[in-house]
Image (tube, rainbow, N blue to C red; front, side):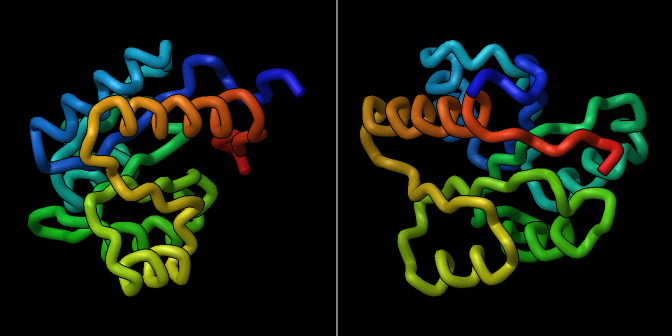
Length: 149
């Protein structure tokens, strides 16, 4: 199988809760995800980052987006819809990572072309395990698109 993507693929974490952002980074760190994680805390900032506008003009395009649904300004579903309608961004895999287990959030996320939906486990050990499995899948098994698609 091998690693088809850059081992240092950038991750964009879109998360408004500093404690959840820290927990996610900690879980990734614990699982030796050496990918660089950038964090933005709302959907509007995320779009600026993804489109490399303003303060984000020099950022590297992420290979994967971890998206919380409950965000200020522009919520996660609105952001997901915009990403997947943008020809330049729609190929970036988006993993919804949220506390919501509501059926309508899950269904809506997939209807908007989320690549997977992971309800955040409450326990850190469970969460770290979810991040380990995600890392194995997205960074070891899956071939990710290049920017020039």
